[in-house]
Image (cartoon, rainbow, N blue to C red; front, side, top):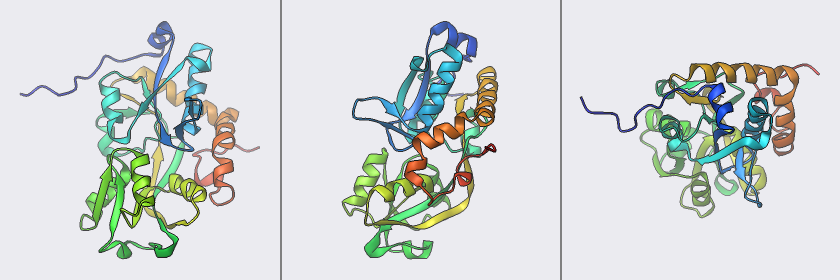
Length: 261
């Protein structure tokens, strides 16, 4: 039998992370407002705020979170290769991924959407026929269109920045991605509209750990629940997402649990 190209790593426990003195968390560098690098070279965004909360709880200092920049297509690989302890890179839960990683409790809801130029807004799937759709490799949008609409012509890129630049440059007619990301992007780029706001069923975003990291997954379960109960999740939302979405996307459509004020 051929050996796996990436051998599974030994389980990482919360106590082992405490002993190391840092927690390595995979986040995006180019997916604002969820994970991005600011002008000072520091990671920021909603996922990053959750990572800082975990670092402070585990190690007593949010600055002991070591944010490792990942891309959509290499998130599983980074966990399996032991390059990170936790993935918080806007990671949608799917049955396929759940065979390779272990997910903690979800903290956000999301659906797929399609953004296109105002001069030729795509409002339904049929309008994508004979058009070129831009996709990020390894995303749920990539899998959805490959499986459900394989007849639609597409161009695929590794990084979010590449994909959105392709739309700006006119290399494609539309771009499919998480609707939450598209709403934020379109707000910052006049001339573009999310003409298809929801595709398929709602999905969920959750932290992920390497397969078999049961103690760390259980710890994250407790922290996600704690953040929902003590208001930390809402505080992270208000700090990073509220100003971006405004009234266009209600808070209840994003957060899994919205505690009563």
